[in-house]
Amino acid sequence: MSLTEIARGIQDRHFSSVEVTEACLRRIEASQDTWNAFLHVEAESAMDAARDADAALARACVRGPLHGVPVAHKDVYYRAGRVATCGSRIRRSFVPDHTASVLSRLDGAGAIDLGGVNTSDSGCNPFGLNVLAGRARNPWSPDRITGGSSSGSGAAVAGGLVFASLGTDSGGSIRLPAAMCGVVGLKPTEGLVSRHGIMPLSQTLDSAGPLTRTVADCATVTGVVAGHDPLDSTTRDNSVPDFAGAIENPVAGIRVGVPTQYYWEKLSDDVRTVVEESLTVLKDEGAEIIEVSVPDPAPMDALANVIIFAEGARVHEEWLRTRRADYTPVTGNALAFGLTLPATRYIEALERRRIAMAAFPELVYSRVDVLHTPVLPGPVPTIAEVEIHLQEAGPLPLELARNTKPANFLGLPALAVPCGRTDDGMPVSFQLIGPAFSEPLLFNLGHVYQKATNHVARIPEP
Image 1 (cartoon, rainbow, N blue to C red):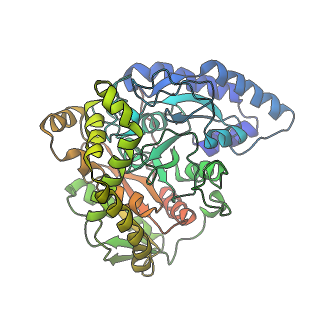
Image 2: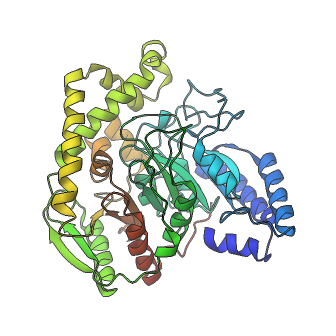
Image 3: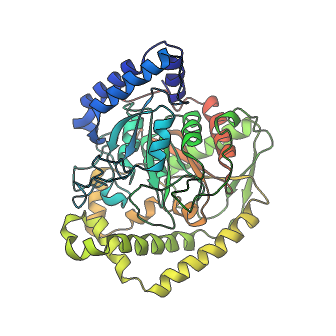
């Protein structure tokens, strides 16, 4: 069942939060050795919260749209008094004294927090590599990577361990695991969701957002966590729209832009076929499909790397100098590269970002309402393929995120939606990139697509 179905079932007393939470905990225990999705499970506190949720419901008190629903979070989110490892040896015993604002909002909406899920080391690599507890594994094929850095979030939602999980995304770290694990993932508009109480990587490009089974679920969770936060000065003081209420709108006449360069380059034949078929579905639903030229995203991809690595190096500077051996090699190398970047290069990247953020929407979204692109250029890599590439220092690390980083660079919302399978049976997703604060439109298109297809029907068994 989806999150929205479970929430409705709990509120209608078809089953209790205790029953649902117990079922999730049993499934986590049964799958942990295979999928390694969780870094720590808070079973006792979750069951206490579930009993409290049922007691509140008996008094006709519904705390919010997630009342009694089990969820999780990438282990870079802080909860006061609980360990937040950040997937790192360096922070394996770190206990924060404050709680992330978005976790507090989930609590307020009635969600049951089952604990922290796996993450790439320090939230900084696209493979899910973790020196502390090993990698999360893809529920559809444990010999494949989950993507990263929100690796456990992708695995936990795809495997039916929880009904939603929060991740973070600086260059694709929500959308990559969503695409590789066959779930929905939102990188929100810059400033829509608070980052207070989350381990930073890039103060400029970091975003926090949900991974869920369905677009409707994603809209519901986004409605809970979005909005201005006085503890995060970068959040916008905008009113939060009814994301879930807009998903059923007709999509006839919506202009879906297909970029004529960059995004559709370097695709494998099977990925191209599947993503093109998703355009046919949207066209059949009444959307207008338009080829459109966009400003070259290739420099944006490169400049995003400059910003991520420079700012990440600043966060980790002392640890890089004193505890370099405690990092996963790919994470340590990337962050150490940031120490070598000259200040002029970093400032140039920020200046060019400011120019692009003004120019891109005017050039593109005056002609189309949304862009439609593949998320990954090829099939989900095997763990063995990744290891070979890392040993040979090949191009794979940056190629994985070539289609996702431009949205971070531009501060725009991007939604990954599963749309089929490659020839080897692994998930494929398309990405909808819209103008700032166009999440209602992205959810609308994604939901209409999912209603017309069956790409959320199955859950793998451990």
